[in-house]
Image (cartoon, rainbow, N blue to C red; front, side, top):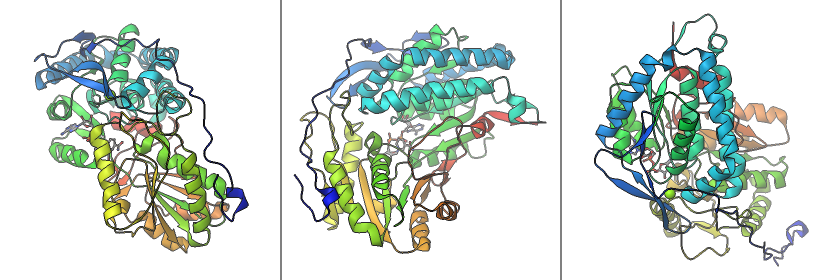
Length: 490
Ligand code: NAI
Ligand code: MG
């Protein structure tokens, strides 16, 4: 039982939920997965494989093909052939039928895909089954609808596909990122080679099975697993007319440099350091819940995570107290348990990175608060963490941590809030919490960020565009805007 002077905060935080694990018995994983090239699963040319593990148990789930440059080139060739001979010649209506079919098959296999997503990446099942998988299906449905209506998307223009799209995705939303990339590319008549992240390749390989069952012409979708070198080979292949990348700003910049002057187009969706701004007139309980959702959702492995809280000075102490209490009730642990709020950190390397930031804050004498919840012995875990009153110039405020770590700063005026919110190298997203509609418009119009939520956070829909300012990236994905990078217009 916690006791404070505020009666609304006097509640017990030591109650427990009974375990509610989602069964994984129905999940069928092979012990080894090959590369998906030209409609077939084929062994990597050099015969190399790597393991993908469950970060909650540190046990290996399967071994997966390590695609070499030769494999990548073969996949691009097959995509080019499929583009020239079949896909670019099909009517939009026919392309749409295939996309609708894939969307329905994702829905039919939603439970299996959600469990695999949680096992391979560590995210809570509550999220993978309510966010990742339904949204992945929704993106295929949405872009299926555009396939035969491109003349309405770009009225008065002649719309042509680009050719082969090379697509590289990260580990935080594996199947959803695959859908974000593949669906608009196919809808507009391009073919693709997709490179999933090395720690979370399994749902993309399940998607390859779906693509095969959906009878897509061979070579329209190729999936080549591997690590950074495999991605680099894809970027280097001159037959990829377009590169779509989501991941770190560091690699994004490298890709941008290597494509400069080649005439090949690209979209980059990179890091973020979003501010959630709470004004004194906000509904504070809702705001606190929104801030918790904004940063602790998916272990903070979210590029648009609200990793900085800016709270108006007059309500700062009450908001911080409410936040601390809420943190104590968050459940960290088994991703397959339906009560889990914060699952496993995706990899040892990512946990090391997060811990080094927490150590840095400790060494610099910052005001640190971590919940005391138990965490399992094995696996990669990080308790939800707050750093209170951090200077704007501190690395914890400036750099992307990509973990369940929230910095808190205060402000007095709207100007100060906007100035602090904009003062990082990033500009992907932001949040504003206030009772006043006029303040929402005033503040959101001045935030230099691609997506801004008002009185909510982390809400996604396939019809709404997504992308960043500054070092958060180039181009937009999602919605009508997401079609543009896959077409040439005359
Ligand atoms: P990363 O940028 O290295 O990996 C993302 C994808 O790019 C993976 O598929 C990877 O294999 C591939 N890749 C790596 N090197 C490449 C290269 N030279 N050429 C082409 N593709 C390459 O990100 P990483 O190392 O997994 O995470 C590091 C940090 O990046 C995280 O701590 C986080 O701050 C940020 N990040 C941001 C993401 C976002 O959604 N914006 C997603 C993942 C990470
Ligand atoms: Mg894994």
